[in-house]
Length: 142
Image (cartoon, rainbow, N blue to C red; front, top):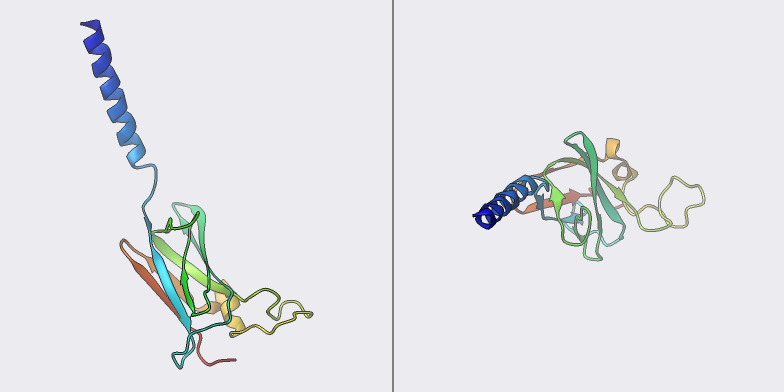
């Protein structure tokens, strides 16, 4: 009888542990996108997309390298893990050695400088359940 009680307690403990952990991790959703100029041509200048939000009172971020065809896939913690649901501010970082922050920059920023800061980019992303897509319209070519 004691062995039967031990097995039942073990099963109950296992079920409680599973239920407790099922809410531990928040769902993450895929986010893909494309950066293009106003005329529809792909942005081919390279660089990165950076997104940040405050979720459950904690700062979270996602990032993506912009491919040569202007496409990207945002990553949260690692390869293929997706992004937490929420509203994100978005900015762009140009390729290495680009920009106008450092007077000695070797390469001009390949898009308008307003996209380099969260406060001026005008870009936001609402992540919901399912597949999400971010289209970045860079306006006229510099």
